Each structure stands twice: as C-alpha cells, then as structure tokens.
View 1 (cartoon, rainbow, N blue to C red):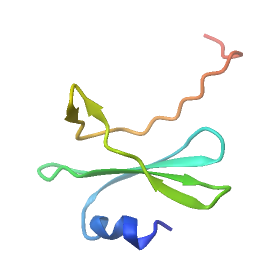
View 2: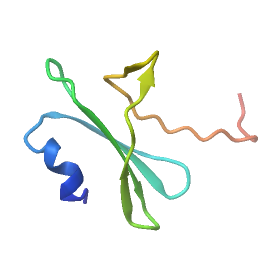
View 3: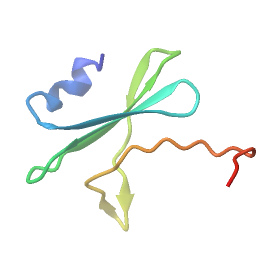
View 4: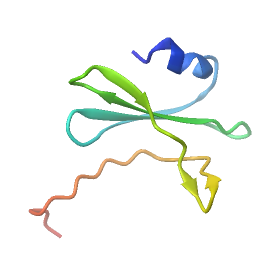
Length: 81
C-alpha cells in the first residue's frame, strides 16, 4: 500500500492508475487525472526492499510534461525482429 504521506494528495481525485512491471523487482505506478484538472504523480515500488519512492516530474524543453504513460520495455540481445 502506498504510504499516507505519498497518497494524501490523491484522495478524492478521479484518474487512471497504470502499474507496469519494470526491470528487476520494481513496479512503476503512474497516476494521471483526466482534464480539466491535470494532475500526475509517478511512483516506483521495490518488491525486495518493500520501499516506495516518488519519481520527479518529467521535463521537456524546460517545461513539466503533464502526462506520462507507463511502458515496460526491456531490451534484450536475443530479441527477434
């Protein structure tokens, strides 16, 4: 469960939550609200350490990106094209 100190701002907001298994034993959790109120938060949960961390905002050309989508990709040498 996401700790209260990290989740209190999410209470009562309607949005999409996307969970994606990442590299190793980590899960990426993206929370994005729908317009007109755009509100985004991104968290990583380490399954081994049982620890949450919040990712900083993503910036492009000096401006904060308002929406980030979760995508799990692990490049591998044996991938076939």
